[in-house]
Image (cartoon, rainbow, N blue to C red; front, side, top):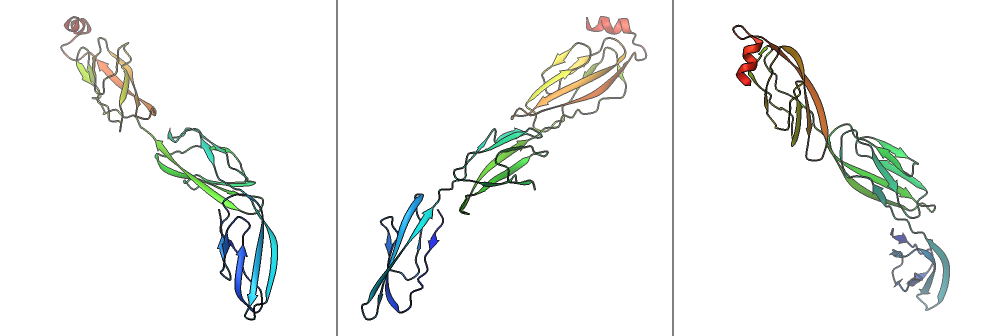
Length: 238
């Protein structure tokens, strides 16, 4: 809770006794005090002059409870995934969300947000109570991303020849290759053999450790090379 500063305006006082109404006191002229619980308190000031004369003044102080809290649907996400941010604060009537990527939203209690780039972002929620008291809470969001990439293969590939496909994706831990000929593979760098000439669409789906995925395709141009006909190629791999 925020410290409350009390200022003595008495003329001629040489001694002070402050009773803050919560079993706490001070003999300073201008003390500060922090209330640990919300509620109404009677604050009393007893002053004494150099001649021993005393006077007492009392006043009410209202302490409001304000406590920033947020619920986040996920703290580790993939790029472009929507994250729900829900206000769970106590005593708030105003909200400011700062998502750590230059995006700031005012006067919205709960919202959603997505990040287009991988990185670590600090999301902050600042709240204000009816009495102007403030509090803030922060949460770290990890955004992951992956881009699928395949190392280029030769422009022309021969029927019956072994073709190697090499994954060039960053941080991939799972692979699914579709070679366009009814053959699939879950290896990182697999091989395949095409038995007839055609232009095949090769598809690679990759995923990283956080479950983020991406897909890419290339074309494999397969021709009957000189000295090898389609039937011979088929026989050599049968």
